[in-house]
Image (cartoon, rainbow, N blue to C red; front, side, top):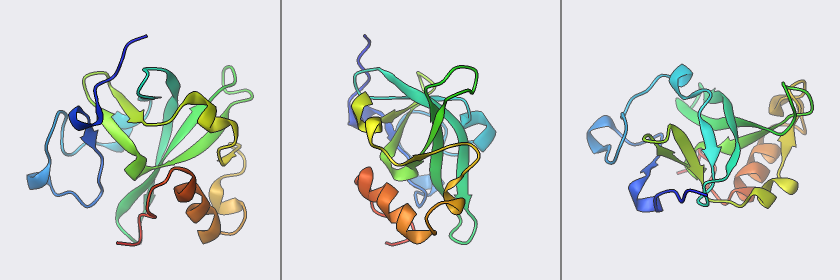
Length: 143
């Protein structure tokens, strides 16, 4: 299995980073449709899933989550996971996002079905805080 580059060679995705501060490989400004379909892999090179959507918080002007699909076959039985944007690193050479978790991390991860997106779940902010806690990232709307 291929080993991905250490964290310092992948680009940290940070919604508050300006174009002039951008460092590392890859473009500093990309369309959401370009990133849709990228694999999400872990540091061991295992594929965890694919980016289905990017969720943008319009009030805060930032990407909140990448929605990752995992499991199933031809869309049947697949589960969706909201991955906090700050938990991902871009590996532009492999056209993938790197998430520093093992596959087993998703055994108990907060996920959802395609017919029940997070805004329809347990009432807003509590769900979002739980997701950020699970991935050990600060909530994006607090500095």
